[in-house]
Length: 210
Image (cartoon, rainbow, N blue to C red; front, side, top):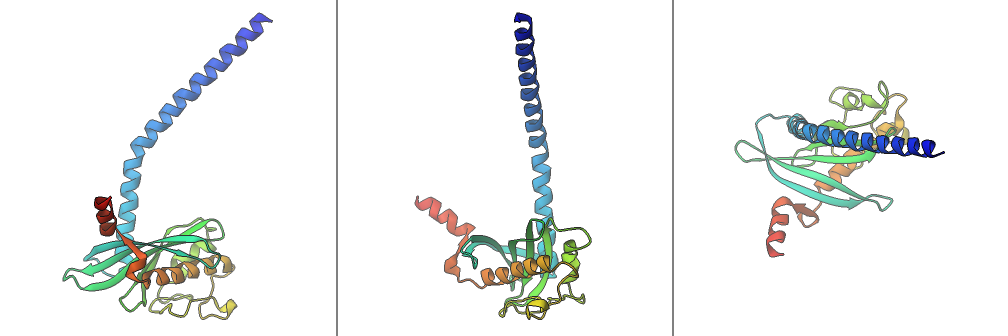
């Protein structure tokens, strides 16, 4: 009996030791990869902004954070990158907007001109089904079946199945609705008054006052 108890104790100690070592290794690997991952995300965002604004020589003049409640009362956060050209002329803004798609969160970056018309868009993150909902990265681009480029979402964009003017992705109505909702929400955030926006500059001033 004592031998059995001793064996169980040794097993527990060994397993605990292995768990501690593996945890340390994973933490170290995470530390090593965190930097490159963040750099890649920053590059993806920078490239995305140039893509949706349809210009390569630009400057992010200001970054705003806008929080708004959706139809169900859930608070959503939007990141708005105010864009200027090399001559410091206002080009509009690129807006990050996230909604729930068929397979998970659908994060979209939408470019708007100063009047609010859509210049372009790109998907930053999605978990949609390959070959179906994942087609959203192309389906709504200029010249494609669901083309939304140049449209003004002042009147919310909806799929034709819901009485709207945009053709949904074949067999992916849920993804199409989620995508258009993200675009509509992005437009609403972009058009929000400056009072609703919390800029990085504003935050710094508040921190000084504190």
